Image (cartoon, rainbow, N blue to C red):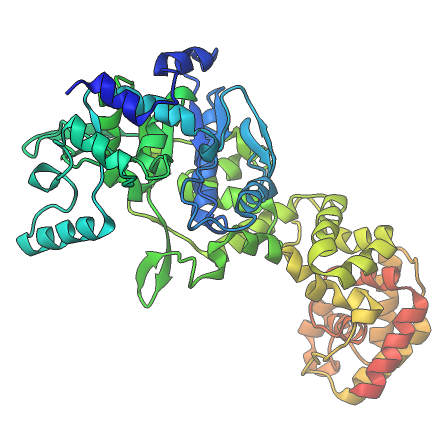
Length: 549
């Protein structure tokens, strides 16, 4: 067969060659050792936490080496594509500070000299490379129907053979030019397949950036390169795009390991140098004593929107994912409490090969530490930004008096031992509801060691004694005076020395005041809370307390 005649028959509209595209997309001018990586999701659903994890690894590998990180959208599966799928991916990455240098930066905006970064807009590029393969006798049209392919699969299952289109099952592999031409004239739909040069008795090996050397059987299947609509499969598009975009490292989920023999074969058939591969183990979840992959259908935390809705600070989420990637991140953070997470040198060869166990409790603890390291102003701004979208009532209360709102987060925020009562912004409402009169609906936690009569007497007397704006030491002296007046010890030590001589100690007096004003046994700095609320509100709450208990 004259393969140039066949390529002209199949691709009469394609005039460019791969060489033309190599000129259009030249090698990048980057320092030696710089990595070019990409995150290349399909817009077929929400951004998965595993996708965010893979994007973070790719971004770190690129940026810590002085390279380039791209966001490419692989939209060749039109049947499964969802509305706003692209914007959901972009917003998910940006929400957690993973910013691409090239590719999509908005639903309808791309940047970079190696685009377009949308696969459905690159059809002619793929077809130029496909035409070249036909020219070399390495690709051919296949006219088999879905029913015929299904019949082949059934026969292979009965024979317990490798499934796929190859060998004696590749019915269209040796069609003559005349047969192909006749089928096309009759309007028969066809796909373009690779004429695999693989052999069943050969094996390939490659070095995985995470797992080390992997050896596998060589590919013998005549995989589909172009579907009936001329749009490529993932396998073919990956080889073409990552070549032209000068990708050096492909970092993706381990479900793609089985496809590496196909990909390496494609690169070899096209005479191209393959990128280096690194396959990430899945993020796992504990269930019934075992482990399973986090599921899009079962687990709300599978979607990155869950973390935005709950209000986990983006830095906390990223630091948790870095901890999953490299367990020594925890040591780095301990030794460098004020350093940016971007200063951590991520190493792929230190990543787990068996799957990381996702732990929301651990994530919450890390987020608490992150928030505890911020200033009151930073915490207030971030909480308000979250509330603006997810809790409008709380936002309105905070926005009404930002200075007052900031004061709430300043209680006990000292650098030596900062308080850690918030791990996500959705906890702000409950944590500080007592600081906002419209949200204050107390169910009082009462100290068991004090009688209700004494609690009422203490509260009513304190309402008379309270003077806003007092120095903290002077304020506490007032509380001690009240303790003495009510038959309680002025000092805890004094009470412990002779407990039978007193009803309790000054700490019990503080507990009554705290419960009366906040409804709770535990709170941050009581002195600060009382001053922030002011005389009228403190007195009103004390009267409410004495009436309701």
